[in-house]
Image 1 (cartoon, one colour):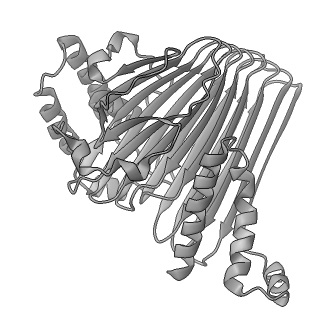
Image 2 (image 1 turned 60 degrees about the vertical axis):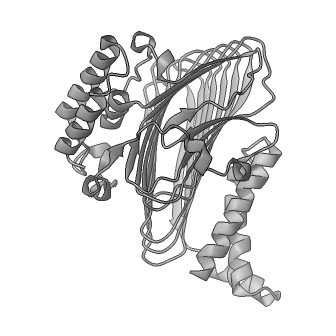
Length: 422
């Protein structure tokens, strides 16, 4: 899509008049900023390895609100026992008559969305953040109340089975209150037409709170996924993020974490599996604004075919953030000669009493180990599978919920089988 295509879709959206003038003005303000900024090009430093040509080539329509979209979705195959699930079909939240626990405060749909209360992420010069605010089609706000260990995982399930080319723009606000904990799962599934999924997620962690955030991205190869996550953490809070990504023609995650008060911890992990001509980009910035905080980045990629991967990981330690403990690790396996990986771990340190490290390795499977395994009676296929499982195990171990961990290990097993048969 070019800018005139976005303008046409925006005019169509505004003509619906589904909200007050204040909300319409909110949309117009951010769309005007988007038109000034424009779409990123590879001349932009943060986007020099991200090729948006397919996104620019396709044309997408905003999603219409269908009367009964759930009728064409088999929800049973997505059911997970004991998990509270919020369902989005073609970008729109679906009411399914759920009874929410008393310690969970939920605001759903655009009817509850108040522009005056929105927490605008610091990087609002990002064109996709601007685009999300202009086109937001679903807004969901969830608060875990104080002093609650919320044992039931909360899942946002995004399903698209439309045969038409759609652009969807969810906006999520998640707050974990003081001395509370929660597990939050995002799962993204599309199977038919081309999809442009542009999501903005804002996470707030209050004092002594804990959030385990798991993101599962298995969209079709006709999908472009842009995912912006902003996390703000207060004293002694803990954020643990794990991403499993095997879908989309282009998938880009922009994760910005701010450790704003003493004693906060942030760990961001990911496993990327790519083949054919897929591209999976991970761009992480963790900013230490306070002393005695800990952060870690651990991303691993397995690349096949002509696929491409990007890891841009940066840790910023401000002058006041003494006693910072931070690490970065990026390890990548190229299992075909045409796969490419761009890895750029960075440290930006303004304090003098810190412990910070970073490292990156990219290579192929060790031929000597493969030979050893085959000499012990294993065939070449099983030998490669064992090595790839061992390479990825550390990422799966970051998931504390055993049922979710088992589910992702099963997805990985299927990916390995399919990748060897292609």
